[in-house]
Amino acid sequence: MKVLIVGGGGREHAIAYCVAKSPRVSKIYCAPGNAGIGELAECVPVGVMEFDKLAAFAKENCVDLVIVAPDDPLVAGAADVFEAAGLRVFGPRKNAAVLEGSKAFSKDLMKKYNIPTAAYENFDSAEDALAYLETAQMPIVLKADGLALGKGVLICNTLEEAKEGVKTIMLDRQFGSAGNRLVVEEFMTGREVSVLSFVDGKTILPMTSAQDHKRAKDGDQGLNTGGMGTFSPSPFYTEEIDEYCRKHIFQPTVDAMAAEGRAFKGIIFFGLMLTEDGPKVLEYNARFGDPEAQVVLPRMKNDIIDVMEACIDGTLDQTDLQFEDNAAVCVVLASEGYPVHYEKGYVIKGLENFKDREGYYVFHAGTKATENGIVTNGGRVLGVTAKGATLKEARANAYEAVGLIDFDNKYCRKDIGKAIDEI
Ligand code: AMP
Ligand code: GLY
Image (cartoon, rainbow, N blue to C red; front, side, top):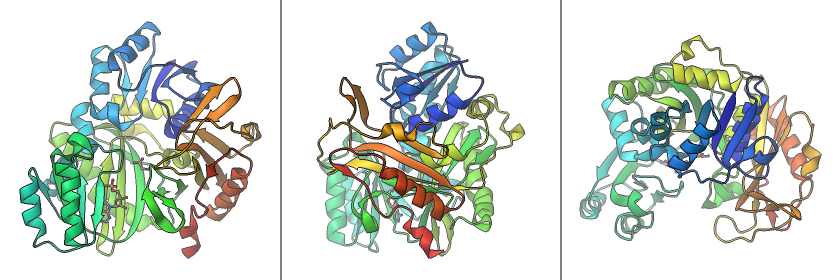
């Protein structure tokens, strides 16, 4: 079969890697793709938001399955457009992707269906939000309702900071229309875990857990980024916690969406905080995480096409989802200065070291093929992933593999997976 993957980052490279492994797949297209994906797929120079062009391309090239990976097209209704064109699509429709697209929607859903999450209030006006903050406990968390490249969350320690935050989100509109509404949320403490899951509208199959490192610098210092590295599984996500989450969070979320007439088919990514009062939902995403996919997917034993088709057909209850009994660590190689200001266009050396090296992967995020070779083309450049029998071994392997790659202004965190040492 022929598959079109919509997207062009590290997550999409990890998806393409799994799709390429499927004996059922004869041809992969990726729009727009990147230099690494180009080794597995034919890259198509069409943007992820150009739905009509993508649909026309898929029809013309007899694509059997379209996989929509990023949040922006999903929230804007890409799946609906492709379905209307008669295509088979993996990814939630617009009315279900709202689970990620509106934080106010997801908070109201959790409240209505008793799914554990932080206490909150939604606001449509800055005036009301400011009045509420006067009597609220600090620290407090402000969240722009809509998509804001993962930057629309402000943790405020004082009333002054919180007032400034309301101004930033609702009045200055720093995140555009994402700030039309505001969620003001109780501050929680605990360890964070990401659980991605396959969903077919009624059945949910959680994948192995992972943990991201969102800050730019070691010791969780510096600015928030798209993610500087991940490890999987999370040793803090115990069987007991998993059992609780399946019963009180995962299945109830799927049932709630179905009850609301918004049956969810695709990936639900649960951002969880393991608090003293039990696991609570920090956020939902309607897609694979990036760079969570880079540590979760290489450990998946199933044929990804079979699982995705089961999601579309509503037969996930007949799928036995399995992961290898090992671990993986991904270290993101970024351009020095990311996420603020950085140079690009530097030649990347050492990529050939990963060819046919079992258990090692170099997933491309911001790269470009040029006459001089593959060059850096973004803030996050590569995700170097390695497996190991244990988390410690996987981490040692990943950092060793980081040394195989070189480019000017290469930067990475040195402490990805440091939390492992606490167990
Ligand atoms: P989100 O995009 O909602 O996952 O938020 C980004 C990050 O902000 C999360 O990964 C947490 O580290 C932090 N965060 C979000 N909500 C809260 C909360 N209620 N309490 C404490 N930290 C939070
Ligand atoms: N790694 C976090 C995300 O994909 O949103």
